[in-house]
Amino acid sequence: MRTVLIVEDDPVNARVFSKILTKRGGLSVKHTENVEEVMQIVHSGEADIILMDVSLARSVYQGKSVDGIKITQMLKADPQTKDVPVILVTAHAMQGDRENFLKQSGADGYISKPVVDHQEFVDQILALLPNQ
Image (cartoon, rainbow, N blue to C red; front, side):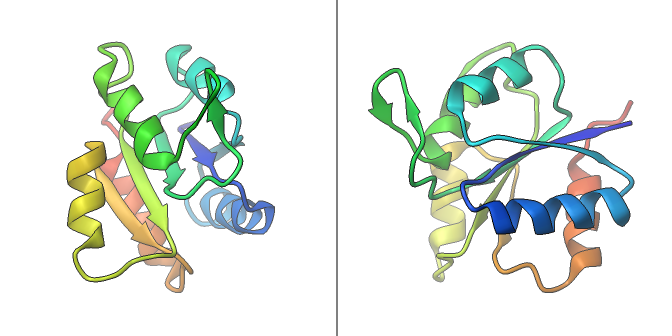
């Protein structure tokens, strides 16, 4: 079974995403906002794809505040984790933000919150899953 790692600091969003992905997508789900844990999960190959909240309010890594863009940059800069697809999720989507976020972070895709069309959400994630 393919696993989606949800990096999200809002437990309600995390629950909603988990439910949609397991019920509609038939995917398994892990959730954490702890950056060390994110790195550990991705390095050990336990995540096939990552849903990354852009604005992580409480996330700190090696003593510094980091957001989803920064974490994505770190994952994409690491030869061991660069091929794991990352989809940015954000509620603050202004025109142009999407391109900026994608360019800055090196992420593979982008989803705006709130997620209205559950099927489209699942399809977007399934489309980016690496073929096994």
